Image (cartoon, rainbow, N blue to C red; front, side, top):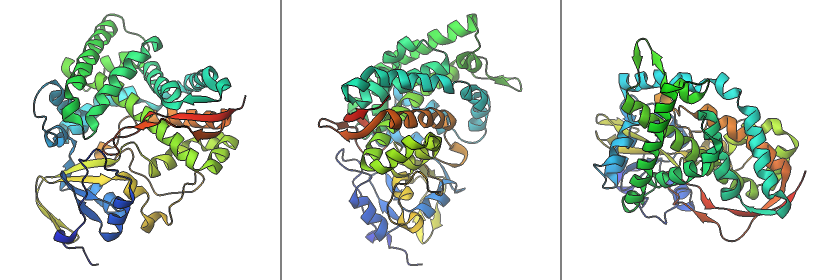
Length: 400
């Protein structure tokens, strides 16, 4: 196999807010080489290389370096980001995962599905007769925030606070982190205070809900410290909201580009789960998964030095023609796994929740909102890191 020499490999300006990680430029770079250079390190562009490097023994989870990459090395946000289970390795990672796992029981989440369905119907009812809506503001945001409230056992009436502060925290996953830092840290302080109140309440008044399970999380005589618990609660609120909101918006964008598949989903709601997987293959909100080299090693003729950040481009891998053929979107097709939830030891802890709530929402939307079309005025987060629509006006023909 011929490897593009390092000096000739493509270069991608990913720190430019106007750069698109799903652009023709990236896809052209994928044809030139399996990797590219970026301001952060290396970008891996092809499916097979992403699959292998996702679990490579000489790479560790690399997101911990994200704040420093953007000039943020201290302060409340840097400390909270460092606390993420995603950024832990070895026994510390396994310990936190063991303690948090009971709160993510499929049985616990499965029992909430009827409420997810009822919520989706209620939100659609509120705007269906108008024949148009801002899909982000009127469906994706309240649905994602209220699902998190339902899941954690929080009052659904508090969804607007959850949405507002979580959306602000989400700015930290884009390339404008440094300039957005003051408002990010203000949102973090508000969510910390909210988490402290939840911990105090469930400690004094335990209930049969997710939050109480989390507060009481214990295994083999070990338990979450108060700081770990507070950090985890804020991460759960933020991560559960931000990813679902963005991914629902990206799903609507994708289906509007493929109306035949919207009709297939409307006719067969059982395809909801496959629809989620197919959307996340071609249009994931998590645009890259991050690794860091723990030692210098050679991979396919490329010397990767210790400390190098390696971004595994999820959309580029998920649409690689070497694996998936000509670009297409088909919710009935059988595909290899996508990497929208990461992979390996750091596979997203909340993937079952995200899959469950979106697979219930999308078929109902397809049945009720016929022939959705984009309207002018959509605004978007930068197409790098995590992305999605800030506003997404659409029109449709309402069906009962």
